[in-house]
Image 1 (cartoon, rainbow, N blue to C red):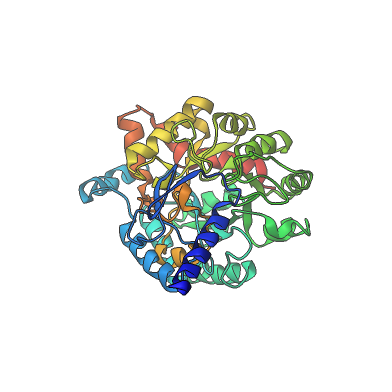
Image 2 (cartoon, rainbow, N blue to C red; image 1 turned 90 degrees about the vertical axis):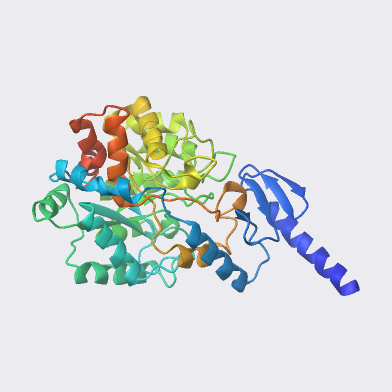
Length: 415
């Protein structure tokens, strides 16, 4: 009995210590867990919608990952997806861009087969360009960022896919009916000690870089910190280097204040490569109206993502829900500053095994690790139909959303 009491006490201390981290979530302890903004977080029931991974075992992570993977996907019917064929035909010659494909080879369990499948799906959906993530935060790569780039390069080469350095390269790929690729990073921690690594990143095919992934770092404030810290002096130096090298500044995952500051200090258009709106769903991962307006004033773009967790409290990623965020953004800064970055994970089970041990970055109190829907890059055609049928967007506006708006930002940044 004494051992049991000690064990319970230790578990309680660990849980309490974990909850004390400054990641912006309030909670109320109840039997079996606690209530949070995202809903009830169970500390015991691994099958609950929200589950606390703190203090759990590797086997627990594996079980939870399998459950989450089985529950992920979009709500589209086969009949709705069948309509994509005609929509694609109407925009056969359009530049179509997915501004955020997460977790390339060697990132949180991503393997060659996962990237190959994602690229094939993109090609079949008439997508012209994907921007794939090769780094997010320290420890996210299974080996190293360099290894991720090398292994991802290998897959691209095997599939005959070229990495782009200019908008001309993208248009060339389109004219040859090929899919092209470029890389991005969802954090820039690796340049903190050496800003010359921005130039090295550009040479490796990294065309877009964010400051930080969710939490604050030496460059800027992250979206999960309610203090809303902005760009630091070192972050200003990073912006200067990125502008000089032709690397596009991205502020998804950063705080809204970071977006505002980045827009102020950047001499080139900036972007939020995969961010939804706080005006519709007020969570730290989404961007504020002020941030959206600031990005728009640079001539930049805000790309809506397809992740249900960032869409609404229900975690639904319907085409209507995604389009609602697109339209909200358009009302603030114009249809010519909208775009789409799916943020669709193509290896959910493997990723969850890697992500669950890091609740500071993926707190269940913010909805991370929950059962949710997630739209793919190919679902852009379902979104297009909603924009046309419900919101009366015309062909030129749709072509902008599909890719031309991003092409303008690319052209303004790249040397």
